[in-house]
Length: 439
Image (cartoon, rainbow, N blue to C red; front, side):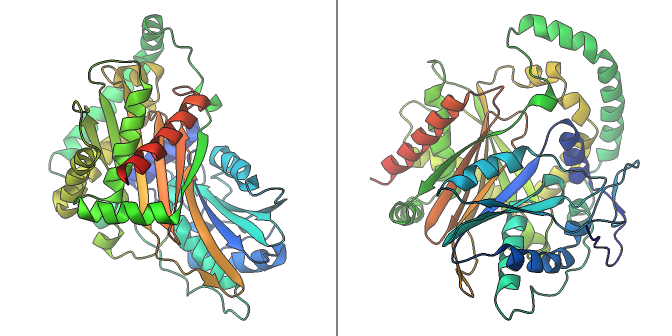
């Protein structure tokens, strides 16, 4: 296989990238974006276009040699691989997504991305999978769009190559005062706790009868739902009318569905973590990379709480966070400390402690309405699905994207924490709550 090595990229991974690098060493941590296409898609057409998008996006031609500290390199990185499988049914792509979210990447060799073409006569799915440490979900949407542009008959390929970018945290600026001291304390404390972890793991196991699944054997589960155009438009209109957002409504529906699935109790305690896009803040546009932060809320559903009230309650702190520069600096400080404690966070005793007093931990990532063209020569983009591996502490994560009036929703779950049957019930109930809100 040929290598792609234009230019030179040598920089140490940023704090978020280092956290994800450590996570991926324990289990796959991938993002998968699927473009659903009508029209004839040949293997040769895709292969001819792939080098152009690899030249355009620097992180698609990077690897991470085994050095300390870990750093990106471009030494002898092969071309992006393409796998072609037949489209035996309209749902064939679902099995391929399931495989891609759980298949690890060889970071030392690279590249940290791959494509699958689920090929049919008149309809096909083009799947882009990549390691989360090199890109957020919107990154994959831009790459698929660039690939489709490069595949257009008579095309000169995607737009020109983009410049190398520094780590996301360098764009944020300096962390909060005192972060350096806290980092030192966290590093030393983590070292002490790692030495004590074998004993702590045995002690905590005696208090928890749940069988422990080794991290390397954990694989993410995936359930899929699609919201039709009429309901999507109705929900968007009602969100505006009720001074809420689709993100808030999706979070409310997931929260209701998860609460109802738990053993009856007065007020379950649930955390819900939302991913927040920060691209506009830094003017990075459509670069491939990590440009998101997170915001976590501790939620207790109020008795007889109306769905739209819950939706607004979830939306308000997210709006505030987007407007506060301090949010980004706080995020940087938190992620720097997290990079020094990832190994401890993965220990069974720590994961048990993290969940003390909590009934469930949820995640929410909504890409919103994607600003992508529908036509690419003789091909039509009919839908975009966003899915991926789920972090080990979440029970279930809702990941959604809206394109061509369709809202595609993935429910990503941890089998050690949630059975597939339960995930399917939560997915179905979430859609029921959305339908109830639209009445």
